[in-house]
Length: 192
Image 1 (cartoon, rainbow, N blue to C red):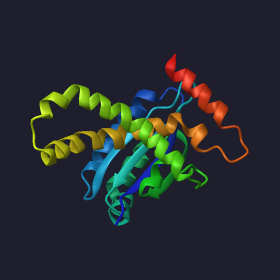
Image 2 (cartoon, rainbow, N blue to C red):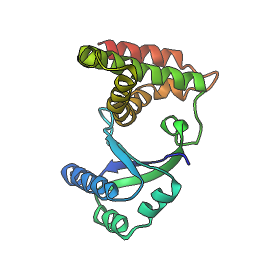
Image 3 (spheres, one colour):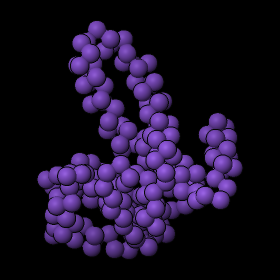
């Protein structure tokens, strides 16, 4: 069975930001108590926006459903009423879950590969810079084990969501739409 990701978008109600953030933390703690919970994350909106992306990952659809239909989640959602506007949810499985847009479309695999590489390269380079000498004397299998244990959570919960958000205009550009100009503008923004 493939892990399942539930992506929830919530717009913060005016003046409710501190309450909203406390409510989000409470929900993530509640989810962590459920069997099959793999982790969660919150992606802050870009400047000028107020829509937060909340990601919950479970080991399979069954464990996600158990959490979704639980009394504790229902009570948590009730406590959140008035803290957010315009909620919408999206479920995805496998690698495509990081790239699927609201309409259900996924970018071509080559674009997904570029996005993952753009996330993986700097993280791997930083890891090697910080820990390369420390891990250098370990046997190969142990070195790879430690490295993947350290990098996988960082990639899954931070860098892949961040890169896919930054690259969304290019990743989701349809043939015939000007995606390259957006990618160039994004590149210049990142370098500034």
